[in-house]
Image 1 (tube, helix red, strand yellow):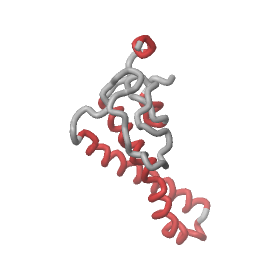
Image 2 (cartoon, one colour):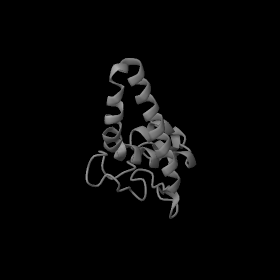
Image 3 (cartoon, one colour):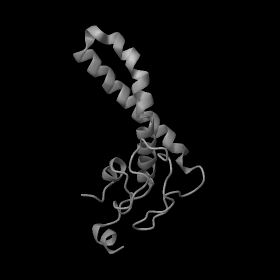
Image 4 (cartoon, helix red, strand yellow):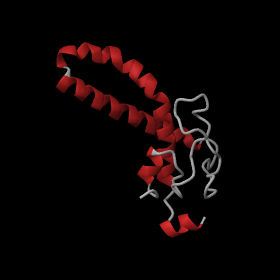
Length: 126
């Protein structure tokens, strides 16, 4: 279960082995939220394949923002329709608050597209 792409994206793990940490800190809300490990501490997988590799993560981050905003909007329409103007007041602070989380998720998702999970036996041997 721990060695799949969705798990690695959601729980800050290496997409190859599913055990080593992707970012240096566990929290997205620390001063070092953007510092990544260059290699997986568990299996040694290169987490920074080439310079400029993570520019594609910008598109992933944009997709996360759009999906979140649509869900947030539909929740307001269905449950808080009389207070729809609060949607406009609240969306910017909420998105600013979620920026570090989406930044980290987008980088992990972008790398998970290009690195396949190792079979369970190979991940346990390393």
